[in-house]
Image (cartoon, rainbow, N blue to C red; front, top):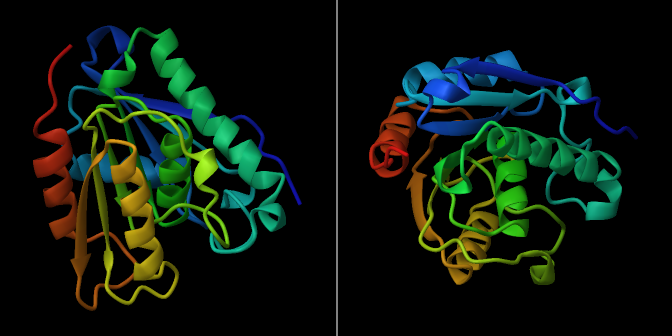
Length: 212
């Protein structure tokens, strides 16, 4: 088992010239540079980009549906890295209301788990194929008020790694915390990010961003 070394790649606009900051979380087996390449397909021209790197290219060793204890200490360490990235954005003068999170697969699960534990008004969240983490969901972990934060969750209807039932359960919890959850399920979609998903993310999360 492992904890993560602190590695954070910054890209995009400098904080002085950015209207928002985006924390990008890569999937299992991928990397921070890999998820940063996704930014070319999203409306992030005005954004400071922050991409943490997972040790061993994996945020936690087992499925996100495993008992939480089985994925420790890696999971707690991964959540701390996301917190570090959010804190760095705020240190650079970006308010939470202009802070966004984007993740794919394991990174999408991590993004949703982090924000659900720190509910407040964010700029928006995009979870490409992900859900909240744990064999069963401990609702007492999830606190705060999203105050209408747009959260887009997309997936295939029969994804081999992320069951639709968990996505729907996660959406219910996030809505209960005041999030505006948009759930888009694609029949037969493979475990990847499609152009339709990035277009939708631009439309419902990034297209409506308010300059600060």
